[in-house]
Image 1 (cartoon, helix red, strand yellow):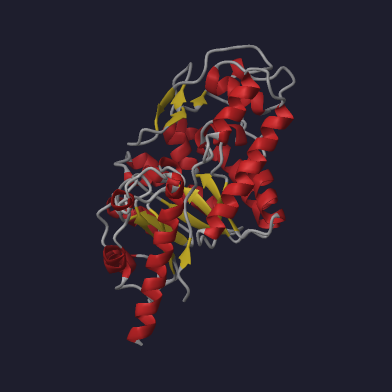
Image 2 (cartoon, rainbow, N blue to C red):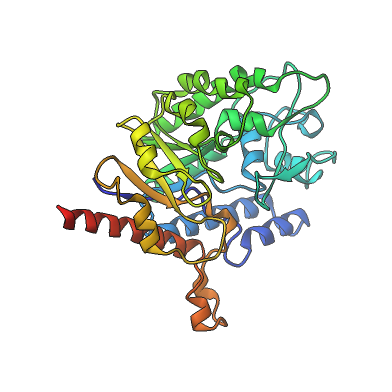
Length: 371
């Protein structure tokens, strides 16, 4: 079995902060919306090509965001606070910016959504707001549009989607108080619609992120995963993706889900790979998050190989960064002023991808040698 090298996400800002510059130019009225959207397309195309050249076999699509990926998910689900809505009910990029900044080139200014840290990182996201009785519908097709872009460029893709339970967990109730978990059955039809659209495009695997599964969740939230994924199964293969900690405490919940694979963070988590292999369904893929996605240091390949060697050839195995590489700089090669010895200690996003691929090749070669 070939070991696939993939990643959970790529830095979106651009090597020269092109995204930030394009946004600021648009907000200042010095660029049109069409110019801003074109800058995004150019960045995505460049980043997909860079990842492919770095040895990534399945490119993540949907990791790009104009503000943050949680806010992108809110728009996908039609979850727009009343104060930020367009009068005609439409959703556009200025809707997104009004939620994130409180203002945009069009529409009425209003208080921005609350911003808070993404789990235990220094990355921030806009907190989803929920009100009693609200409705959800697919209103923002950014993910589908970007999948179309990548497919048109001839790439093999793995769409990335924030999972429904984690999405609700990250939000807050506004106004009359109620249990936001009660909204799960209301958002699942939108997820089903998105997965159906991806299946129509020939997508095989979807990375569905549920990092809440590394937390000590209340029992009601743990119980919500099974019916949620019962509703989502069957249209595409689902890679249930966790990161920032281990999953052993919630592994019984995870193994009961109708998914086809699991990604685990082997850098920050303490999970034993052989133990995971023994407990996971035999037909599941295991994605090993070997390379730290949150720092700038070069990984020790011997150490990384040792983590997976016991299961090589025993089940379908992928290797990846521990989490999205969003938290890492892009390319070490542009750091021309670093001392050569010091530079040898570092690895940025592109170098980390190559290290993960090298670990995969090492594992395959040693397995073949053993047999």
